[in-house]
Amino acid sequence: MNAPGKPFLIEMENVSFAYDEGSLALKNVNFRVRAGEFVSMLASNGSGKTTLIKVLAKLLTPQQGTVRIAGRDVRAMTAGHLYQQIGLLLQDPNDQLFAPTVEDDVAFGPRNLGLPDVEVEQRAEESLAAVGVAALRKRAIHHLSFGERKRVCLAGVLAMRPKILVLDEPTAGLDPAGESQMLQLLSRLNREQGISLVLATHSVDLLPLFADRIYVLNRGEVVKDGAPEEIFADQEMMHRVGLRLPYISRLIHEMRCYDGVRIEGLPLTLREARLRLLELIPPQLIMESLKEKTP
Ligand SMILES: Nc1ncnc2c1ncn2[C@@H]1O[C@H](COP(=O)(O)OP(=O)(O)OP(=O)(O)O)[C@@H](O)[C@H]1O
Ligand SMILES: [Mg+2]
Image 1 (cartoon, rainbow, N blue to C red):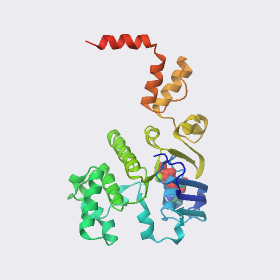
Image 2: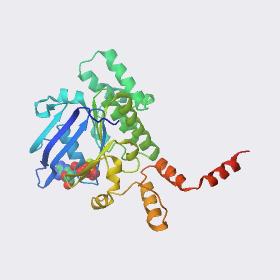
Image 3: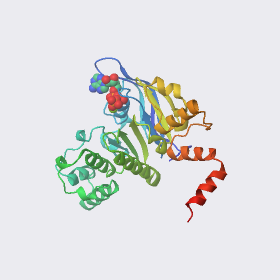
């Protein structure tokens, strides 16, 4: 959801972080997210996505810089208060699930908040339904597939009703249908409930359909941030940081370079590409093909 003018919910200023062993995993990072924004961090392996997410969620303390959530310095926030604002989905669901059954796991957070049993039940039921796994409620966690585990994790996070969702590679390990369903679900939560989203990924094909803004990281540094069109238009930068363009954009780029097809701009989605290509077909030909189809 585009959110110009809304207040910043996340503000990271000049953050640097080094693991004990040595070199900086984050270097002077400035990263801001407005209320209601869908922001993605795009970077290749080892660029600092998970580190940035852990610093945001106060699982790691930066040696330099400040992190503010809803205007408050996280150093002054208790874990309880922080996790009511931020819902965190880790890269590997097995690091996050620990109760024996699905319903116990999803109910754990709300129960810990001291909510009455009826509300705990209701939140668990709603969250499981929202991620499409209501039927798994009674199942043992260790009998679930990887994709089902990811959804149950997300249900557990949603049951806390956070204002901000921070997701580390939420689509990694999902099949193509699962990947698209997960992004559609996240986009719906963003649009309908106004939840702000921060999503780390290195997958570029579906991102332009959903993200309002993209931060590109490389070796712990923010290289660029902007709307998907601005990011993908900078092909030299994408190449330099080891990222590729969405497949559809590459196809159009190659048609332009090698086949001389005169297409304006660089479409990022199938729909845009289809419209741009249709613009090149003489209207007469389209009319004739429509006539052929009409019985
Ligand atoms: N616990 C750790 N101890 C020491 N170095 C670490 C640790 N965790 C990560 N690093 C290093 O910090 C850098 C950033 O790692 P990080 O996990 O944040 O990258 P990432 O962008 O999430 O990568 P991926 O796409 O593989 O998940 C890498 O060079 C990595 O080797
Ligand atoms: Mg990572």
